[in-house]
Length: 197
Image 1 (cartoon, rainbow, N blue to C red):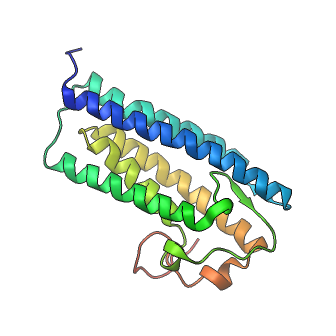
Image 2: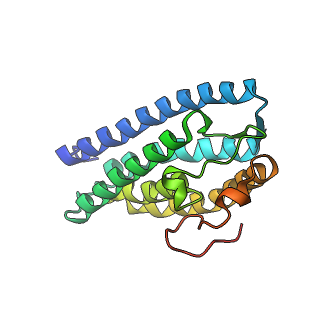
């Protein structure tokens, strides 16, 4: 392997920062889960959650591995565009998390009787956080030309999100008047007609 370039090390640092962010999110998720369970929270989808954790962990190793092992060059100007997309996804992600507050979780846990949240980015989309994840999984590897990681993990994530969204919507419909509060909104594409689950 050739000696890594400055931009390759910078990319490894960027991915490491995202990994630290994920660890912080998992701790927040654990605290929010405790809050939900204290109030009678019901969990669904434990099986697919394990697959999701594995996929997202592998992603954080695959992107820098592709850049270093295959000696990917920084693809200016596309790398800068991808970096801007990553920054935008972070903003959308944090907005969704802040809007949900203690009800945000990496797991599917709903508290029966609590109305589904329809403020913040949920005014326009039913799943803004998942939109952020979709864009991030494609854009983050492309910051440094790791297109194999971008394509392969985007495809795997698409299949996983079909299961995850169906599971989450079923839980919200059963316990949180979901259709009444968010049924008229599109799922992942702003301005689209409502997608069928």
